[in-house]
Length: 514
Image (cartoon, rainbow, N blue to C red; front, top):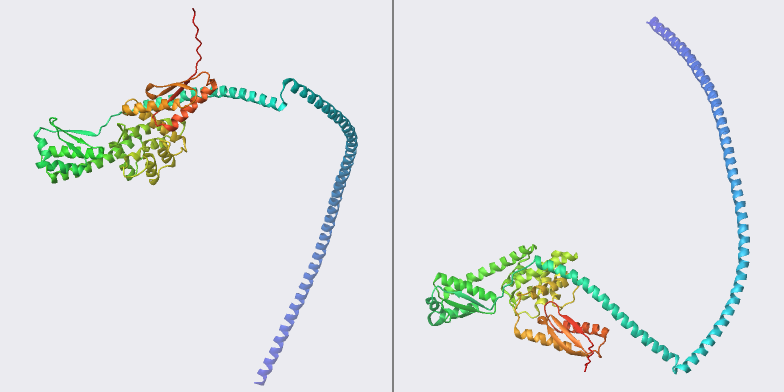
C-alpha cells in the first residue's frame, strides 16, 4: 500500500513536470511568435509611414502649385480690372470735359434766348398796341364793338355749321336707311317666304246642321227645358230660327262655343236629348276639348321644332287655338311669329331657338280669362317668369307692345315679327270705323305742327304726305319736321307695320303772257 502511494506521488510529480516543460516550451514559441508579429508590424508601420509622408509631400507640392496658378490668374484679373478702370477714368475725364463745354454753350444759348425773348415781348407789346389801335379804328368805322362783332360772327358760323350738319345728317341717314332697308327687306322677305302660314277669319257664331227640322223640337224640349239647360251649362246661346235644318251657337268665348258644338252634335247623333244626357255629353265634350288643347300645343311645338313645355304652359298655349285677334287665329299667329323671329335672328347671328320660343310665346297672355287684370303682354311675362323661362323670352313677351323697355335685340325682332304677321294681307280684319279714326288721327297729328299747310293720309294709312309752307319751313327744317311727326305718331298711336312720313316743300313761280 505504501509503495502504491509513493508510486502515485512519483507519477504525479513526473506528469506535472512533463506538463510544465511542455507549456514552458509552448510559451517560448508563443513569445517568439508575438515578437515576430511585433517586428513585422513595426516594419509595416515604418513602411506605411514613409508612404504617407511621401503622399503628403506630393499633395503639398500639388496644392502649392495650384495655389500659385490661382494667384497668378487672380493677379492677371486684377491687372485687367485696373486697366479697365484706368480706361473708364480716362473716358469719364473726356466726358466731363465735353459736359463742361456743353454747359458753357448752353449758358451762352440761354443768354441769347433771354435776349430774343425780351425782343419778342417788346414786339408783341408793339403788335398788341397796333391791333388795339386798328380795332378802335374798325369799331369807329363799323359802328359796333368787338363783342358785338364776335357775337355776329358766331351766329353766322353757327347757322352755317347747323345747315352743313343737317345736310350731312340727311346724307348719312339716307345712306343708312338705304342700306338698312335693303338688308332688312331681304331678311324679312326670306323669313316670310319660308314661314308662310294660313290665315282664317273666325266669328263669334257656329252653325250646326240637323238631320231634319223635327230635331229642332227635340233640341228645344218640352217647354224649352232642354235648350235652357244646355245654355245654362255651356254659357252659349242656342238660336233656333226658321233656317231649315240648322241651329246657331252664339258666344264670345270660343272654347265654350266649341264645347257646345261638340256636345250638340253628339246629342243629335245619339238622338236621346234630355237634361241628364245633355250633362253627360257636355262633360265628354269638355274632356275632348282639353285633350285637343294639349294636342294643339304639342303639334305647334313639333311644327316649330321646339322642346316640350311644362303642363301649365302647354294648357295655356293650347287654348290659343280658340282665341282670335281681329279675326286672326292667335295660335297660328304665334306659330308664324315664332318662325319669323327665329329666321330673322338666325340671319342676324342671334340664337334662333330663343327667338323662335319668344315669338311663339309672345301672346300667351291672351289665353288667360278676363278676371285677371293687366295687359296681355304683362300677364304673359308674369306667366313666363313663373315658369322659369329665359330672361330674353320674358323681356320679348313684355316689350312686344312697348310697355316694357327692350333689353335684347331679339325683343325687337319679336315685335317686328308680330307686326309683320298682323299686318299681312288678309291676316286680320279691320272695321271701317277704326280705319277712318286712324286716318283722321294721322292727319290731326301732322296738322298740329307749325308751318304745315295740308296733310294727306294715303295707302290705307301706311303713308302720310305733309305739304308745308315754303316761306315758313326751309329745307333742313323739313327734315326735322318729318322726324318730329314720325316720333309723335309713334308715341300716340298703335298700328301694325310702319307709317312713312313724307314732308313736301316746293316753290312755284307763276307768270302770265298777255
